[in-house]
Image 1 (cartoon, rainbow, N blue to C red):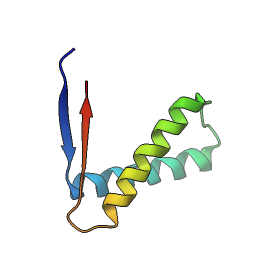
Image 2 (cartoon, helix red, strand yellow):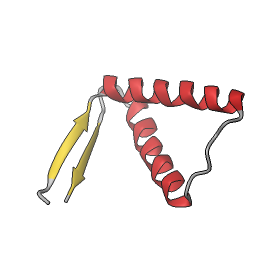
Image 3 (cartoon, helix red, strand yellow):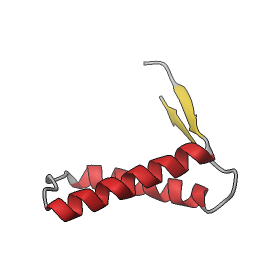
Length: 67
């Protein structure tokens, strides 16, 4: 597999956080949350931390790398 990278602008981060919060509210209200593997929860929480840190800094985004 070839390596690569991708970026999310500050607008992308803001939109992703809005979508996450809206989805979380809808799932919480419906009570229909599927069970998740602990590793998935950990990964999502780590990504949310990166996005929230970026959102606190005007103009900052997120860059990701894969190998």
